[in-house]
Amino acid sequence: MIKVCKFGGTAMAQAESIKRVADIVVADDTRIGIVLSAPGKRHEYDTKVTDLLYRAFAEPRVWNDIRERFVDIIVGLDIDFDIDKEFNQIFLDINNGINSHYIVSRGEYLIGKIFAKYIGFEFVDAKEIIMLDHNGNIDLVATRRQSKVLLNQYMHYLSSNISSSNLSKHKGFVLPGFYGACNNQICLLGRGGSDISGAILSNILTAKVYENWTDVDGFFAFDPRFGNSNLNATISYRQAIDLSQFGATVLHPDSCVVASIDETPIIIKNTFAPTNCGTKVVKHNYCKKSKLVGVGGIKFNKILQVTKPDNIGHPLSRDLLWALHKSDIEVNNLVVNDNNAYLHLTNNTSTKDINIFKKALKNINSNYVVASRKLSLIKLVGRDIVDKALSILRLRDIKVVYSMVAQDSTLLGVYTKDFDKSIKVLYSSFA
Image (tube, rainbow, N blue to C red; front, top):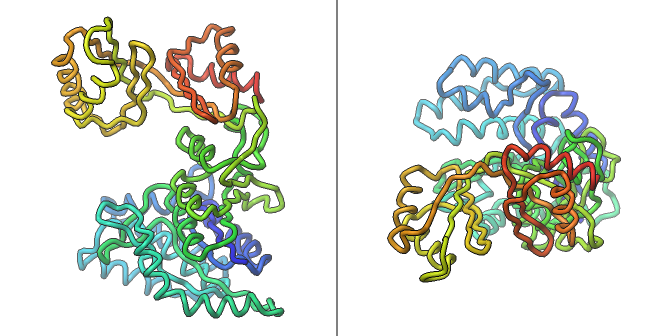
């Protein structure tokens, strides 16, 4: 059996936590593919290496701070690693006009090489494995094709070791997360991209399990800052995506999409409490009725309310789709409720786009009213819980502007002034 493990930035922040990661890896001979994030914060007032790399564009002196972070790790691990050689190559590439994605990716690249040296695993550069198309989207076909060329021989060696009775020689490889390549150029996967890298590697290797090691035990029903709540032993890919899109930072939602292709289970584990059970993310979660799996929310969301005051002309939904087409406006969600519609806009939506949309609607029916609303969104994940939730909020005089019910989740729109109160009321009733 092959396991792929991803470890987050907190685990890579300093030598002591890296030693903890190494202990976790060598404790299980099936942990073969290791994906790493760049070093994160060592303490509350520290700065992540990735953020330092972003700053290095405008503040060249920051390179000294970045180098010192890695020197501290190398000294703490007591390994022979020529960090100056690596930095000289980085500066040479910068002078030759390398792209900005390359620079930002060096945190994962360097910690990957350092950890591989420390644990005795092979280092495989993600730019040689993970392929993206010209839009920056993952190209799994090209990635599988590329991985066969570079990993087949090595994986054959690993497979022969795994199938033998002697597993004392634990071998594996380290892949830096967060980036891949497009047209031979480094391309970033975005914030939280190392989660995606781990899912891609699991897909490539047809891993039986993808362990995502982080600094929490898994998916709780409520954000821990509201108090103690139940840890979900199991949730579905869909439920994990819903919670991740509404504030849960446990797992990148796209990693669930990739893992679901081959139905690879994802197990969320706590690097700093490795014996804890964690949360298993699978295709189906057969939870009991009226059980709350989780609550997430987005505060201060950009929302347009469209009101059609009469029943003359086309249905509201048809007019909306036409106006959206004419304005090319970006919408995350569209909820139609009787003669009202609520459009959840992306952060990229400009005032110009909104004005074009309004004009298109007015041309269809001059009676349309379009207004911006200070609404926030609450996502309730679980089956048959909406009636209880609405009743609880109603009793506390919290107005639910609209609700949209799906099979395993409910989306509620509340006034932003009531957002925090709503979460606390739900917590006190469901937790």
